[in-house]
Length: 616
Image (cartoon, rainbow, N blue to C red):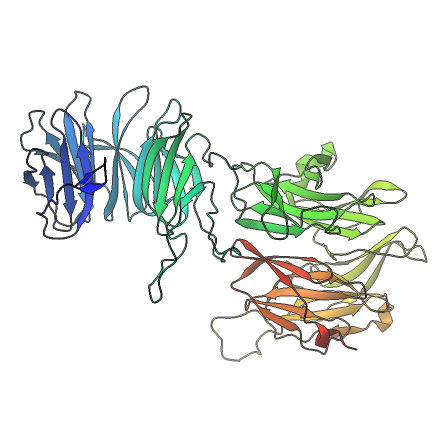
């Protein structure tokens, strides 16, 4: 026991024969302290001389305690633990010994958390429990019956905290993993999911920062040498409601990462930060503009929703899209008038919205014709092409209809192109012009047929180039690359050879990719088709790295490596850079910067040692 006035110890209560796992205080005319633990008994302590009584009934360690009042005013105590049972004990007002009142069944695993919530407005008393089975169970403690069951949003629940934002009572739920759920016990529904994950990479300034919608109050010291440190974001194991100085209802969470976080109970965000997660990213796209023109380097879509702009160090941010709205597709392009814009599409939408990166305001909306919106289906991918000062093209694929291309070029302006492409075609990532203000683009369909679209010198708009040697990897868009001669080549990913008939099976099967390089300056009859030197590891993402003299091909592969090829020297081994994990995103800014998305965090690479790859 501790004196809160000066922080000094008052006394030590000794009676348990094993580890104490839970404590709770019971208010009333005769306040009580209740303790329980691995010795399977409850001990009810009276502040008068700290005498105690023992309650027996559990068959396994007791991990959770909670106290409350029934509608008639009677005080009661709840206990639960590894025997998967909840037990109610009635506490007489006179201060006599507690008596067992009943048992509640339902959990299929050990119970680690209990709370009593009094519903705002009705005054009804409900009990809430959670544990290893991942369910939040809501009980009527008076009738000893189940009231609601909320399954499966938090793994191995360890903490519960009722709080009252406004006119209803909610319960915060935490456990293993990075999520915190906010549950409405009266309705039995999950109102909100929050994230308290801590960034895995070390912060450049030596401090770790929380990445959920919260304010980090404190961090523990780094682990001493030889000490086993839990994985960051391993879970929140304590929750507590509180109120800020201005009356805002908050709750606090704490866990294995050593941080105490405050959450705004009204919005689910922190009291002084936007309601989206700036650190955990699902999509990234580099802004195609000179760095000195704008402070922003990347457009980022968050895992939990929203989009924002960030600088190259990740220290400055500008909100782009609200955090409660989910963005599914992202692209960036530079319009001929010099404006850097971000194109994004919300979930299940056929509408593409363009936002100015300088002002974060909407520039225009691109959509199928009104009569076609019901038949196109949602957007399935966005591809942006940029030729600075000349042309910008946004290629939009839909679930049910043929793709559309929206082009901006001088002097014509904005042009909508439809009917030129067939459903299922994948376009090269970068356009190339013929010097007359027109544009050409290479396309590959599911069968591996390569075509060039645009306006050639002889006036044809589409002409075939040839077919790949093997089936195309359909999820990999081809990449157009500018060669030192000024001509263009096309990189296409194809599947590697299948196992020979009768060969013994190999488990697990690992897909192999072959990278073909097509010379688009040749006629189909004289097509020069080469293969880049590659280990065969599956390519997850790839992109063009634009340089002043020629382009390079950059890819992230299934073996957790970043690779850089010189298309002018296909027989040379690529430059290889190890990655800390599987990559889910890749974007580049010439002449030497590559951004990679790994484990929901983006990493920046400067490719400075490319001499051996580029020498003639």
